[in-house]
Image (cartoon, rainbow, N blue to C red; front, side, top):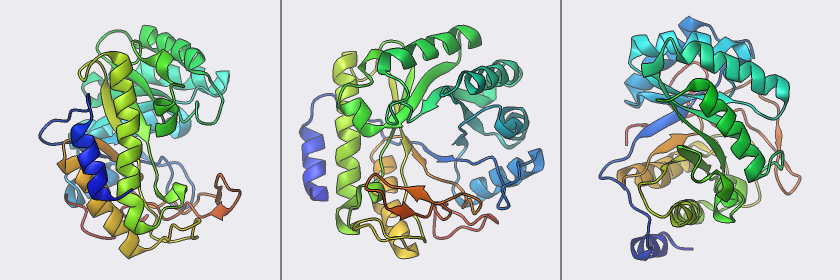
Length: 302
């Protein structure tokens, strides 16, 4: 679908409403280039680079107890004036309980730094939970953290658009929708249009089920384009391609008034190769807006 068609369709669509300006955030890993757990000083350096190169003041992490990330990142966030969406990995009871305990303990000390908590990352997409099962986990976490902290989840756009996540609406305070034109094998010329179409399908369905545009907070939870690695179907990685997607799709969405988390802040060279839906192997080490030593790959100011 052409980008102009997406804009026309979105303008004509019913419930989708955005503010005058959106917020840009970044997904942040908890390991350095060698695969070792980051320290508090590492997070301070991460925040300094993000402030300088992007101007952002919000990041999201995925598993609060892994590498003691909640304990280490929140003091650094306070010093740097950042907020953090903390993650809980519910796929095993062990990780769920450990992450929940880390959130409860550390959020109480740094409440101003905790923007929200996500329970799960694409857990419905992977088939690990039904919407009803994940709703129960979210209710558990909401009870544990108490009032004043938003709790929700992050999942693939299609799990919202097809109704899988409907059970969460009315319970979750915030929903993050992930959409990757690269992982759909799109040519660059169609990548922005495909991304917009995915997000508007997801947001539109959520708002329709919720009964309004102000019932639940919505973000793009992940999107991005790798600067290196393997071609995935028709999607070609590369510096020029990544910069084009960032400028057109990501900044375009933010400029239009939507909140977006870019995946990801820094390259993670320790990561193993990923397997796409078609079974092909793809590199996941070069998705960062910056290199692992915190150098911007292109202009990151929208």
